[in-house]
Image (cartoon, rainbow, N blue to C red; front, side, top):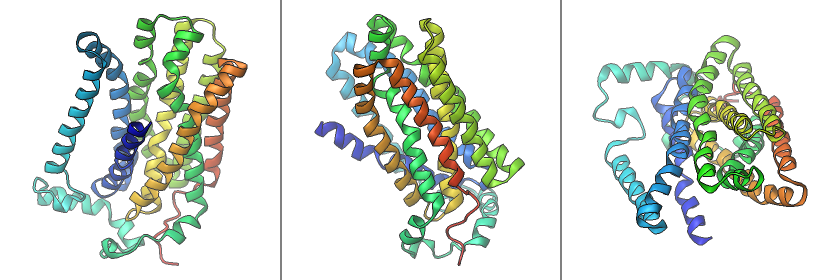
Length: 324
């Protein structure tokens, strides 16, 4: 438990800092796509990891799988330290033409909320916490994370115990939801940016979340009540894929609301999401053992739809840095 807790401490910085970099490296019309690209990592890792870990364990034992994962983390950390920068102005490989293009795409935000001294300004916690949009993002993201953590923690056992699959079959089909993420997350990022151009920032972001999370809730329910294993797994994989179809919009909305303090807002939202992720495995196990797996997945579908409803209170056009 201590090791897993410390792993979470180490991972906690990943999403907020990635979103902060997207805020400064990409224009306002590419925030959905930018976030979708790093969220695709969930699909890539989730698809490849079960097969890779199983292969390593069969040849060298389970401890070696941990050593390999740790080594990969060190390599990534070293590469990130040597190559990545917080802002494009700091990167030696960004030429003047690229820098001018990036700066031009940020002119609207700079006009609404001057950013020349942003690095010396304290985070406006009072303003962030007094915003209905902030609380809408935090509460809805907690609901968004709840069904995902079922796939992270219990899906393999669900396939083996509830669906009667062998361990080998469970390992293979357990990757299906992450393949759904790999396919649908980039589509969701593109759709979010397109919807913003078509309907405006508030309605465009809302429409993307409503579409993805409502569809996810529907597929969760259908998958839970489908008898055939293969069709049920495909439906449940689609449910997770549609969840991640909507997820880039949460992160893009953090940048919409406050570009200069998007890291802080993203961190608060991510904290709320992990609260849902902490509750999910515990409550799912309780419902599944007490009432059955179908009820556990039905409850997850309700929480998924609640995530969509809570976006009624999110207004991505409400720039929290704008002077009152």
